[in-house]
Amino acid sequence: MVEGDLKKLRLDKWLWYARVVKTRTLASKLVQAGHVRVNSEKVSSASYTIKLDDVLTIKFATRIRILKVKAFCERRGSAKEAAVLFDDLSPVPIKRKDTPVFIKTPAPEKRPDKRARRQIIAFKDDFS
Image (cartoon, rainbow, N blue to C red; front, side, top):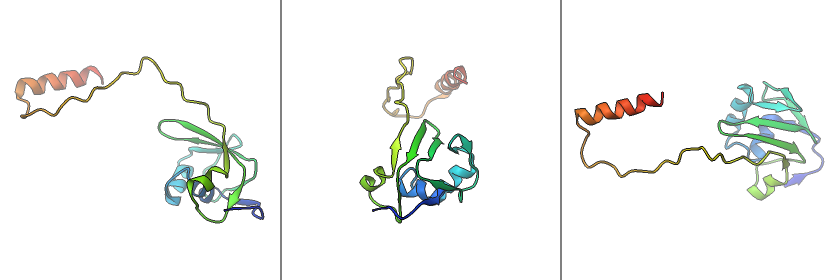
């Protein structure tokens, strides 16, 4: 339910309403950790007030999302309602060709013996 009478809203509430994060607590932690920028300025307070047409840059562990605020609402709604709240300006992630492909091996039938454990440790040491 998009409401036209709202002119501004707390950042943590909007992130939660727009379904960027699962809970408002996570939204607050994300902002306080310094992973959110509003109009290219780092924000450290979850109570920061955002307005229409603000551009949010949100850094997650695996990607960066750039969202332009289009609307506000009074409650957290469905995913369709949340999609109306913002324009996603994020670049399309590039799939790298040199990314290793991991093949899931079946679980061993027995515990590894001493020799096998040493091989496992040596293998892991090569990647650290």
